[in-house]
Image 1 (cartoon, rainbow, N blue to C red):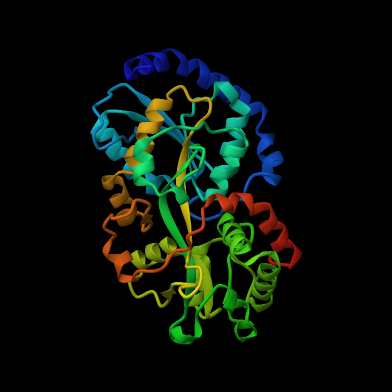
Image 2 (cartoon, rainbow, N blue to C red):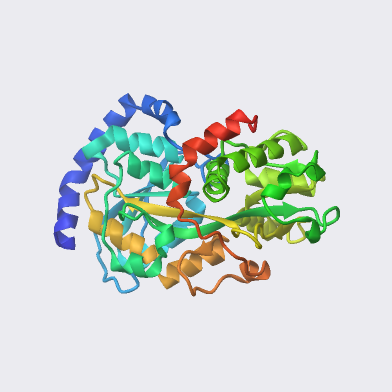
Length: 380
């Protein structure tokens, strides 16, 4: 179908579908709670606290895309609106495509897509963590797409083998420490943080965070279940205080002297440094002599019942382009998923590091096992 035909179809069908979907969603919001067993547990940080909102102010496309004035792409997004909106605004500026953005946590958004079915107005699901994207694909909420652009820009380990989702930025989850109390020669691996030498010195975010679930899932894949359970039990035993609801609070606890070491996503650290250049916590790249630092993704997929799958795919392709990847690095403090893109000065200041080469879909496949393991050993 041509883009003009898609736009005409949208202008005729979207108001009806939107009103139907709102009615269905109102009746079936209970699905969000029912789906908790199968949907990755949500985060309580800046990526998931934005309340559900709808606005029609944004958009995005290929570097080579022509202007498509009047076309609409509707995104269901669990990304913080302030972080993703500048990229979408740039796309609208380049192409004339209007973005309708609906933001909420990933779990409720997936429940909403399931409730709306064929009546959904959504064209794209944009979310954090491969575990969430894997779950959406398993629930039949996404459709496979074929794109030589995405295949060229995004390494295979950051894409669904069946083309149902793709990574768009990288987020490294690594070790942070208080340099007044810890020397770098005392640090090495995630596993080492289970050593009794860190008893009463470790801070962690809650096991409810999908980021920690994916980290443990990657360890199960790399080390096996028995060894990983031993490590996670050691983490729980070494905690200096109760677990934290978000990475920012955990990092601030290290700065305040509540603990000496912890694990967090690097972009939270970058945002703290923007606000407090003298923030007294340092980054350490974990597992450099073994598997490499754990790296996850933010990413997107085309919704199975999209009215405008071509428009959604074009937007995804542009988000993987040189221009958009540079914006991810400079404004969001995340690493480009496309190789060869210049990183921001801040990211470069942290040095290069070896990444774990695992295919991120394993985080979804191992997620249930990871959650059960953390619960078993008492890691809350």
